[in-house]
Image (cartoon, rainbow, N blue to C red; front, side, top):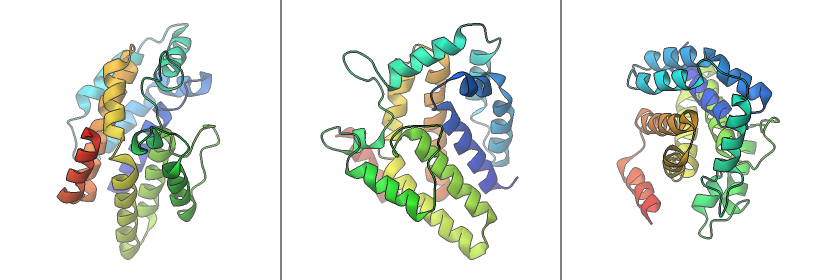
Length: 224
Protein backbone atom coordinates (compact mmCIF):
# COMPACT_ATOMS: atom_id res chain seq x y z
CA UNK A 1 0.00 0.00 0.00
CA UNK A 2 1.39 3.40 -0.95
CA UNK A 3 0.26 6.77 0.44
CA UNK A 4 -2.30 7.38 -2.30
CA UNK A 5 -3.82 3.93 -1.83
CA UNK A 6 -3.95 4.51 1.93
CA UNK A 7 -5.83 7.78 1.44
CA UNK A 8 -8.21 6.08 -0.99
CA UNK A 9 -8.98 3.39 1.58
CA UNK A 10 -9.71 6.00 4.25
CA UNK A 11 -12.02 8.00 2.00
CA UNK A 12 -13.92 4.89 0.91
CA UNK A 13 -14.30 3.74 4.50
CA UNK A 14 -15.66 7.10 5.62
CA UNK A 15 -18.04 7.03 2.67
CA UNK A 16 -19.36 3.65 3.80
CA UNK A 17 -20.02 5.00 7.29
CA UNK A 18 -22.24 7.77 5.87
CA UNK A 19 -24.47 5.34 3.98
CA UNK A 20 -27.88 4.50 5.40
CA UNK A 21 -27.18 1.57 7.76
CA UNK A 22 -29.38 -1.11 6.26
CA UNK A 23 -28.56 -4.69 7.25
CA UNK A 24 -25.71 -5.01 4.73
CA UNK A 25 -24.06 -1.68 5.56
CA UNK A 26 -24.52 -2.22 9.28
CA UNK A 27 -22.94 -5.66 9.06
CA UNK A 28 -19.88 -4.17 7.36
CA UNK A 29 -19.57 -1.47 10.00
CA UNK A 30 -20.23 -3.73 12.98
CA UNK A 31 -17.71 -6.35 11.82
CA UNK A 32 -15.02 -3.85 12.67
CA UNK A 33 -12.38 -5.15 10.25
CA UNK A 34 -12.27 -1.73 8.60
CA UNK A 35 -10.91 -0.19 11.81
CA UNK A 36 -7.67 -2.19 11.58
CA UNK A 37 -7.27 -1.31 7.89
CA UNK A 38 -8.08 2.34 8.63
CA UNK A 39 -5.40 2.42 11.36
CA UNK A 40 -2.81 0.75 9.11
CA UNK A 41 -3.50 3.30 6.37
CA UNK A 42 -3.11 6.21 8.79
CA UNK A 43 0.12 4.82 10.20
CA UNK A 44 1.48 4.52 6.65
CA UNK A 45 0.73 8.26 6.36
CA UNK A 46 2.67 8.76 9.62
CA UNK A 47 -0.53 9.77 11.38
CA UNK A 48 -1.05 8.29 14.84
CA UNK A 49 -3.22 11.11 16.19
CA UNK A 50 -6.37 9.31 15.04
CA UNK A 51 -5.89 6.30 17.29
CA UNK A 52 -8.08 7.60 20.11
CA UNK A 53 -11.00 8.11 17.70
CA UNK A 54 -10.58 4.63 16.26
CA UNK A 55 -10.45 3.06 19.71
CA UNK A 56 -13.63 4.93 20.64
CA UNK A 57 -15.41 3.74 17.50
CA UNK A 58 -14.26 0.17 18.11
CA UNK A 59 -15.73 0.39 21.60
CA UNK A 60 -18.97 1.89 20.26
CA UNK A 61 -19.58 -1.03 17.89
CA UNK A 62 -18.15 -3.84 20.02
CA UNK A 63 -20.51 -6.52 21.25
CA UNK A 64 -23.25 -5.59 18.81
CA UNK A 65 -26.61 -6.65 20.17
CA UNK A 66 -29.92 -7.44 18.58
CA UNK A 67 -31.75 -4.26 17.68
CA UNK A 68 -28.65 -2.08 17.34
CA UNK A 69 -28.94 -1.98 13.56
CA UNK A 70 -32.44 -0.54 13.97
CA UNK A 71 -31.20 1.96 16.55
CA UNK A 72 -28.46 3.11 14.20
CA UNK A 73 -30.92 3.39 11.30
CA UNK A 74 -33.24 5.51 13.44
CA UNK A 75 -30.40 7.82 14.46
CA UNK A 76 -29.22 8.12 10.86
CA UNK A 77 -32.75 9.12 9.87
CA UNK A 78 -32.99 11.63 12.71
CA UNK A 79 -29.64 13.25 11.90
CA UNK A 80 -29.63 13.22 8.12
CA UNK A 81 -33.11 12.65 6.71
CA UNK A 82 -36.07 13.59 8.84
CA UNK A 83 -36.28 15.40 12.15
CA UNK A 84 -38.71 17.95 13.60
CA UNK A 85 -38.70 20.91 13.15
CA UNK A 86 -35.81 20.55 10.67
CA UNK A 87 -33.12 18.10 9.58
CA UNK A 88 -30.28 18.30 12.09
CA UNK A 89 -27.31 17.79 9.76
CA UNK A 90 -28.27 17.78 6.08
CA UNK A 91 -25.60 15.69 4.30
CA UNK A 92 -25.67 17.74 1.08
CA UNK A 93 -23.08 20.32 0.09
CA UNK A 94 -25.67 22.48 -1.66
CA UNK A 95 -27.55 23.06 1.61
CA UNK A 96 -24.50 24.85 3.01
CA UNK A 97 -23.16 26.43 -0.18
CA UNK A 98 -26.39 27.89 -1.57
CA UNK A 99 -27.59 31.13 0.02
CA UNK A 100 -31.13 29.90 0.58
CA UNK A 101 -30.04 26.54 1.96
CA UNK A 102 -31.38 24.82 -1.12
CA UNK A 103 -30.62 21.26 -2.18
CA UNK A 104 -30.44 20.03 -5.75
CA UNK A 105 -29.32 23.49 -6.86
CA UNK A 106 -26.37 24.98 -8.78
CA UNK A 107 -23.77 23.32 -6.55
CA UNK A 108 -25.36 19.92 -7.11
CA UNK A 109 -25.06 20.31 -10.89
CA UNK A 110 -21.45 21.49 -10.61
CA UNK A 111 -20.50 18.47 -8.51
CA UNK A 112 -22.22 16.09 -10.94
CA UNK A 113 -20.36 17.68 -13.86
CA UNK A 114 -17.08 17.28 -11.96
CA UNK A 115 -17.90 13.57 -11.52
CA UNK A 116 -18.71 13.10 -15.19
CA UNK A 117 -15.48 14.78 -16.31
CA UNK A 118 -13.56 12.32 -14.15
CA UNK A 119 -15.64 9.35 -15.44
CA UNK A 120 -17.00 8.72 -11.93
CA UNK A 121 -20.20 6.67 -11.63
CA UNK A 122 -22.37 7.29 -8.60
CA UNK A 123 -22.67 4.53 -6.03
CA UNK A 124 -25.83 2.64 -6.96
CA UNK A 125 -26.33 1.71 -3.31
CA UNK A 126 -26.96 5.35 -2.43
CA UNK A 127 -30.10 6.61 -4.13
CA UNK A 128 -29.44 10.24 -3.36
CA UNK A 129 -28.14 13.55 -4.71
CA UNK A 130 -24.62 13.82 -6.16
CA UNK A 131 -23.43 16.19 -3.42
CA UNK A 132 -24.30 13.79 -0.59
CA UNK A 133 -21.24 13.46 1.65
CA UNK A 134 -20.97 9.72 0.96
CA UNK A 135 -20.69 10.38 -2.80
CA UNK A 136 -18.15 13.18 -2.37
CA UNK A 137 -15.94 11.09 -0.08
CA UNK A 138 -16.16 8.12 -2.43
CA UNK A 139 -15.15 10.39 -5.30
CA UNK A 140 -12.07 11.58 -3.43
CA UNK A 141 -11.24 7.92 -2.80
CA UNK A 142 -11.47 7.22 -6.53
CA UNK A 143 -9.19 10.15 -7.37
CA UNK A 144 -6.62 9.01 -4.80
CA UNK A 145 -6.74 5.50 -6.27
CA UNK A 146 -6.23 6.87 -9.77
CA UNK A 147 -3.27 8.86 -8.46
CA UNK A 148 -1.69 5.67 -7.12
CA UNK A 149 -1.86 4.11 -10.60
CA UNK A 150 -0.62 7.13 -12.56
CA UNK A 151 2.84 7.99 -13.85
CA UNK A 152 4.82 10.78 -12.21
CA UNK A 153 3.27 13.49 -14.40
CA UNK A 154 -0.16 11.95 -14.05
CA UNK A 155 0.16 11.86 -10.27
CA UNK A 156 0.78 15.59 -10.16
CA UNK A 157 -2.31 16.17 -12.30
CA UNK A 158 -4.44 13.92 -10.08
CA UNK A 159 -3.27 15.77 -6.97
CA UNK A 160 -4.36 19.02 -8.61
CA UNK A 161 -7.81 17.56 -9.35
CA UNK A 162 -8.16 16.36 -5.76
CA UNK A 163 -7.12 19.74 -4.39
CA UNK A 164 -9.59 21.49 -6.69
CA UNK A 165 -12.51 19.30 -5.60
CA UNK A 166 -11.54 19.38 -1.92
CA UNK A 167 -11.21 23.15 -1.81
CA UNK A 168 -14.37 23.90 -3.80
CA UNK A 169 -16.83 21.25 -2.68
CA UNK A 170 -15.69 19.73 0.62
CA UNK A 171 -13.78 22.21 2.78
CA UNK A 172 -16.47 24.94 2.56
CA UNK A 173 -19.12 22.78 4.25
CA UNK A 174 -17.96 19.43 5.62
CA UNK A 175 -16.32 20.84 8.80
CA UNK A 176 -19.59 22.57 9.75
CA UNK A 177 -21.56 19.42 8.91
CA UNK A 178 -19.22 17.32 11.06
CA UNK A 179 -19.62 19.77 13.94
CA UNK A 180 -23.39 19.38 13.79
CA UNK A 181 -23.10 15.58 13.74
CA UNK A 182 -20.64 15.49 16.64
CA UNK A 183 -22.70 17.82 18.83
CA UNK A 184 -26.17 16.50 18.02
CA UNK A 185 -25.77 12.73 17.68
CA UNK A 186 -27.36 10.59 20.37
CA UNK A 187 -25.21 7.60 19.40
CA UNK A 188 -21.45 7.54 20.10
CA UNK A 189 -20.75 6.04 16.68
CA UNK A 190 -21.93 9.05 14.70
CA UNK A 191 -20.55 11.55 17.18
CA UNK A 192 -17.07 10.02 16.90
CA UNK A 193 -17.44 9.63 13.13
CA UNK A 194 -18.02 13.38 12.84
CA UNK A 195 -14.83 14.12 14.74
CA UNK A 196 -12.86 11.54 12.78
CA UNK A 197 -14.06 12.91 9.44
CA UNK A 198 -13.29 16.50 10.36
CA UNK A 199 -9.80 15.59 11.53
CA UNK A 200 -9.03 13.65 8.35
CA UNK A 201 -10.26 16.49 6.13
CA UNK A 202 -7.90 18.77 8.06
CA UNK A 203 -5.07 16.34 7.35
CA UNK A 204 -5.96 16.38 3.66
CA UNK A 205 -5.77 20.17 3.52
CA UNK A 206 -2.15 19.96 4.62
CA UNK A 207 -1.34 16.85 2.58
CA UNK A 208 -2.56 18.32 -0.69
CA UNK A 209 -1.05 21.70 0.09
CA UNK A 210 -4.09 23.96 0.10
CA UNK A 211 -2.87 27.58 -0.14
CA UNK A 212 -3.35 29.53 3.08
CA UNK A 213 -5.26 32.32 1.33
CA UNK A 214 -7.76 29.82 -0.09
CA UNK A 215 -8.15 28.19 3.32
CA UNK A 216 -8.78 31.60 4.89
CA UNK A 217 -11.52 32.34 2.37
CA UNK A 218 -13.22 29.05 3.20
CA UNK A 219 -13.03 29.78 6.91
CA UNK A 220 -14.71 33.12 6.36
CA UNK A 221 -17.42 31.41 4.38
CA UNK A 222 -18.22 29.09 7.28
CA UNK A 223 -18.53 31.97 9.70
CA UNK A 224 -21.04 34.00 7.72
